[in-house]
Image 1 (cartoon, rainbow, N blue to C red):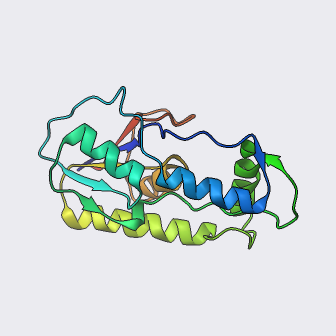
Image 2: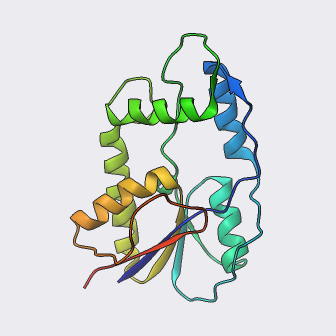
Length: 178
């Protein structure tokens, strides 16, 4: 079985220069609700199954890439939610909120809406869903979640020739299980 995992298209959203904890929550919500920039999306003709997250950017990317066809939409493929890593009212750039929020997630800090173990379990359930369908597929998902998904796929015996680095928008990674 071949699983092609693709990061969604670029989101048409500009983060504010800096903001506090409440601003981080609002910026995350704004990013989640914003449309994609469809430029650069190449059309793919396939009969493979298509899995998408419940987030707008995943759905819009899949429709631009595969057209209007049946897709399996599940929150299992959603991005790892990001919350403010501190409640102290300090204004910081978006990148700082993102990096420190992800560090808090990694170290199992209670400030994040989802713990690392929960993300791992969600990735395993996502793989269960893919294997239940049991055929080659595409998955349109999100960069931070992809890292956990990749790790769990490898643990289940899937292999890839893809090199892992920065995950760019619309970049695809192919995993196969003999």
